[in-house]
Image: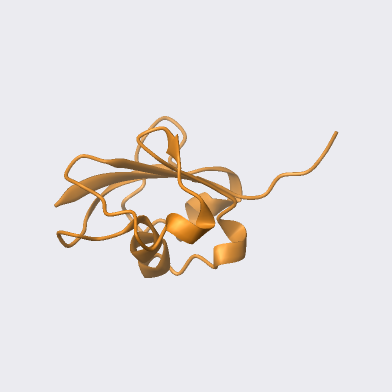
Length: 87
């Protein structure tokens, strides 16, 4: 099945080479297995858990404890932001 992955800020470097799209080059369509989970997709991109601060599926927050159970469906959008600091 096909999903859209959007990785923000420094995370865009985790997109597979040659797949970046969008105005800022931070998103890609990915083919994943039926029943793939948000956490499984992040692991397949070799993203350490500590860099995945905010994870949304179709605009809804997915808590770290739910990422390995949240099954994705065809056309879902998985968006990830790293921790940010400043003020």
